[in-house]
Length: 207
Image (cartoon, rainbow, N blue to C red; front, side):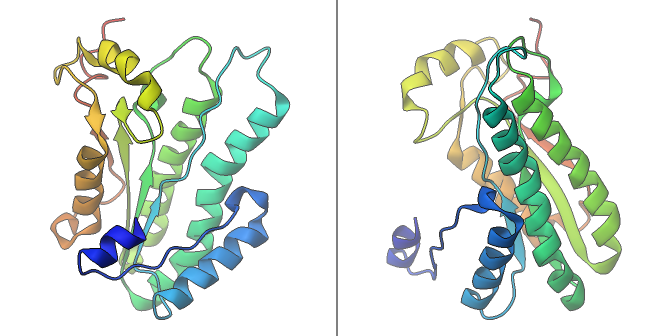
């Protein structure tokens, strides 16, 4: 991705880290990101997430721990590390990526959407906490979306979304457009919003 950005004439630096390893790993990553960007981070998109699923009684303990660490603690720790700098500068935007599944109940898929619902509540709390200091916090809740990582399930996603108003799965570009809007000055008056980008699958869900 960084190569594609630089090839197109932009500037990008790729950084890697095992953010779920520990809070210290998150703080180190935040410091490296700030340094790479000239000392400050103005926009944070909490996009990392994992999706192990299974019946409640048999979901492995390690999967539960990993879900909570990656989908809840990591965003919490990143915001804790980077939002104070945004507050100090009086500006910033934080966008959390949640999920349409946080808005419905699905048998055998409890823990993943629970973590995304937690992130939506953190979005509202952070909007209240940081908004008065110029930092906007919002979330995008994607619907069933085709990504490079789920090509094997495209037919399932197409069947799932066929009855929805959009009639098809979303694309990563659909989600990116929403994130770009929330990060831009065009969304200057948008705080604490969960923006559903799901093709209407939740609004029109009948089963």
